[in-house]
Structures are given as structure tokens and as C-alpha cells.
Length: 345
Ligand SMILES: O=C(O)CCC(=O)C(=O)O
Ligand SMILES: [Fe+2]
Image (cartoon, rainbow, N blue to C red; front, side, top):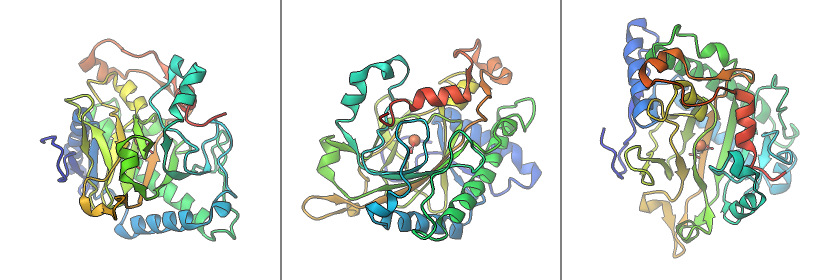
């Protein structure tokens, strides 16, 4: 698959259409693992969420962000990075790739915040996650939103379980259930995202960002995006060069997160690839003399292993990659470490 900066899809496509016919499984599983190994990102089609369900999710997302600021602030994101739920207004969250000891330096957080992320988001989790209780809007502000949020959360988890089974199969782990066994679904995060229109120049001059380059922290991420464009993925063959992740109608993009990379033992096996959201590549996405960029909506779903799961190199991967390259880490502790700079305490 050529990796060029074109508007054609340039990320491998994996078709799950025949997943339920058992004989089709091995081949799907293998192409999924190949894509995760090559780019770290794959497009998945026939994943099991219908066109109508995807449309409904985008309709709710738009309805939510169309509310007034005061209405959205009735479900405010709690202060600090510990509970990632509810509504974050533009600029509140700062996405970055700084973590570990660097995150402890006070000036780092300040410097990062000089370039504002121009997006707003709403985070939803499982009602059974006692570490991060949901922050809901009062029902009369957006009737039906809570029911939609929970129902879509669990719909995405059904798809995610299928993908985890395919990954375990393609990786030839001891059992096809090895990954699903440590993903109850209660620690995932459904995120509704809105990038308002912005002058192209602000992104070009980097005085503002839509979403700066980062890797995801969990095991895998599923992403639905509208047709605006602007998501880019680092070319695995050339550091610093980004390729367009062109939206595919009704498809979803799946990418490997840091924990799955650590499980597989290395950047040279399953890749947790840097990605970012910037200007859309198509000229008809801009308007007027300020080249105002069309607004964009996206819906990522982050999968996280159960909090006490120890993430360490899996035996089947060791055979290919050699000695473990990362210290074992508990899923909950890794998440806390990565979240540190995202929200000011
Ligand atoms: O909006 C997008 O397309 C990507 C979002 C993303 O990468 C994230 O929220 O981690
Ligand atoms: Fe991401």
C-alpha cells in the first residue's frame, strides 16, 4: 500500500463482512494485524454499526454542541486530570505527547498552553466505572441524550470486542479470548468532539491547533469522522511526515494505542502511531478571504484494559520481538501518568 500525501485512502482497509462465517476469520485477523504492524492505523468496513446508527450518533453530537455555552456547562468536566468526563469547552484540554518526568516540570504545562486547542468535547463512560463517574446534563437540557450516550457506548464496545478477538487471533495468542478477558468494557471512553470553524492562518502559523500530534494511551481506539477531513497519521517510514487519513463513508478507523504496543513489545511490532488533526486537505472545505475552515465532528472510542491488568510483553510476541522492551505497568497507573498534563489541576 503506497503511503503518499494524496486524498485517496492510504491506510489499509480491513473488511469484517465475513467475520461471522468462521472460515473467514483467520484472513481478516491476519490483515488486521498486518495493518497494525505496518501503519498502526487501519480502516474497518462492515464493522457492525449501521449507517443509520452512525448518522444518529453524529446528529446527537451536533445537537449537543449546538446548545449554548451555559447549557453545556451544566455538565462541566471536573477540575484536573483525574476524572475525564462531561463537557470541556474550547481550550480547556491540552493534548500533548509530554509525559513521565517531563510532565513534572512546572514550566512545561504553561508553555504547552500557549497554543490553544480549538475544540470542545464531551466524555462518556460506563455507569459502572466508580473511578470516573459520568457527568450528565440535566435531562431537560437535552432529553434522550443520556440514553443515546450509554447505548452507543455499549454498541461500540461490541465492535471493539470483535476487533480484540481478531487481534488475538492474528497475533496467535494462546486463546482468541486473551484480550477480551481483560477488557470488561467498563473502562472505555466515548468522546464526542467538535472542532469549530477556524481561520486557516491560525493553524498554519501554529497560533492555534485543532489537535496536536499525540499517540493514544489505551489498547485500541475506534474513530468515526465526518467528511471534513484533517486527520493525519505519521508516516511509519518517515518521522515527521504526516499522511491524510481520508474519511471513508460508514467506515471506522482503528488504531493501536500505547498499551497494546507495550503488550506486543515494541514499536517494531504493533505501532502506536502519532496522529493529529489539522487543516483539511480539500480546498472546498474553506470559505471566504480568511479561508475559514469548515467545522468538523468526530467520535473516538478509546478502549482501556481493566484497571488492575498488568500490561507486559505477551509470550507470543516475545517469540518475534525478543526480550521485553518495557517494564510491566498496571493499566490504571499508566493512564494516570499519561493524563497528568491534559487538564490543569
Ligand atoms: O478528531 C479526530 O479525528 C481524532 C481525535 C483523536 O485523535 C483523539 O481524541 O485522541
Ligand atoms: Fe488520538
